[in-house]
Image 1 (tube, rainbow, N blue to C red):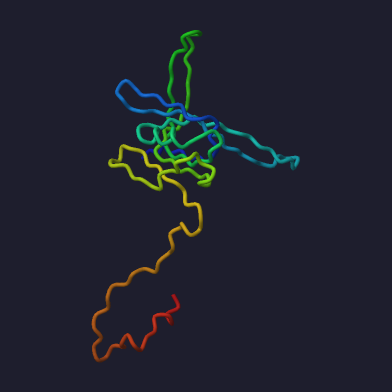
Image 2 (cartoon, one colour):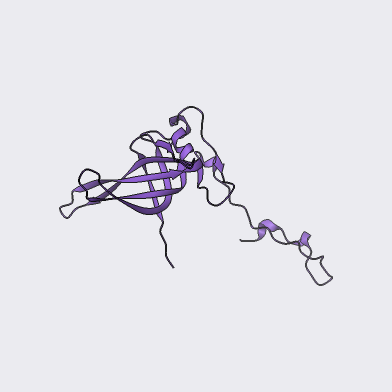
Length: 173
């Protein structure tokens, strides 16, 4: 079994650049910065920024182009892929590791986004399309836990306790 999964939460470092391939597919390229903080042996707090190259395709690319701006806080989920090519000037082989985005969630407050809002949560028509959604902004938007539904009980017989004798609120769980 193999697994190639990348998940990052960070800030967009530049506006997405989009283009259309000769076959008509939209592709967006941008990068995200994440920070790693630690305390060194002398007790000093250290911080390092890491930059991740992101590639989004099709509908997700269009959404990224429309709603993401430099500084936007986002969650990206996808897979790692390394491309290689030969540099035209030096003739050396070049490499670039990218996250191919499958899912994107905008984490900024709605007031921090460009005009026009954002899609609430859409699922693509087929599994080949990436997913995108907006993170809930208030606790009220969070789904509330519901009690599990119990199947209807059979009618009580003479030796069973009836519903009127048991108050559901008295059950400790």
